[in-house]
Length: 334
Image 1 (cartoon, one colour):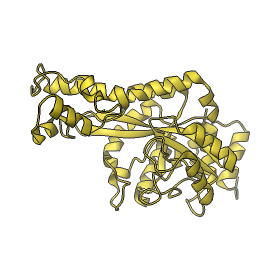
Image 2 (image 1 turned 90 degrees about the vertical axis):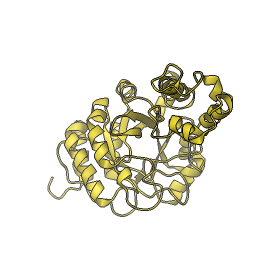
Image 3 (image 1 turned 180 degrees about the vertical axis):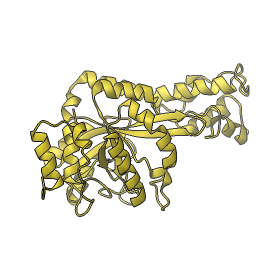
Image 4 (image 1 turned 90 degrees about the horizontal axis):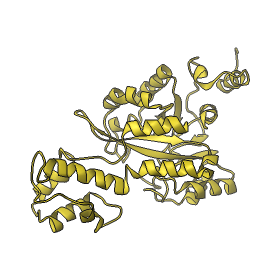
């Protein structure tokens, strides 16, 4: 294939029925990310914590010259139907997905990492698939997470806990009386107003990040992996180096450094991830090189996206992938 482009080489292999994983082992020379982006596969809408409606997000993709966008709201499918309809109307391909929250509670890291889980639009017509996905996500946010956090608090700080502080066990109704979408603030209100704990240091000891009862949002990796494998999702490890970002802005978030993610990488591989988000606004060139080496070593798809939430701090079309990489990604979708 002397003189052929990356895309020509890929097309030739695909026509000869070479599967994607075999192609990824062949170490084809990937072109540098230059010029206009083709696909931005990581975006949020009003369905989770973005500022734009799905229709507005598609309009911004069109304005920025993108051919493809992924809609990947946090732990919800709600923005996908409107997004796909808007994409059809505008001639922009929308790839449906979810940014699934995965919680960890380890000696070296307690917090949440994310998997971008993609699938073909037709899957949304399968009510069994939709119901199963929503049931899985419900355990990571909303009532499922609230109940899990309550159980953890009681196990540590309840009357029979390892470090008794509460006069009685915290119950679900204590939290639900404030909100059906409870945050840390609602736990603080319940501890103060319903359990009589007025000392802020004590409240923080119970619900702060350093608390032995702290439970981050998200589901366990085992449950996520079982679903990913059963449903044959394209699961991509999101922004693995964002926690090591040294610049200003929101791209670092509350994420661990890349060294910590590397320790957890074998577990993600065992769970069934098939890709890694290399191109991301919070990834330096050095981090991109490291992540590309991971992709090559483990035969992973290379993806990228802006993680768009708004027009200023995390704007659209700030990162993405070439048409060549998107075509490999698209072939993997089921």
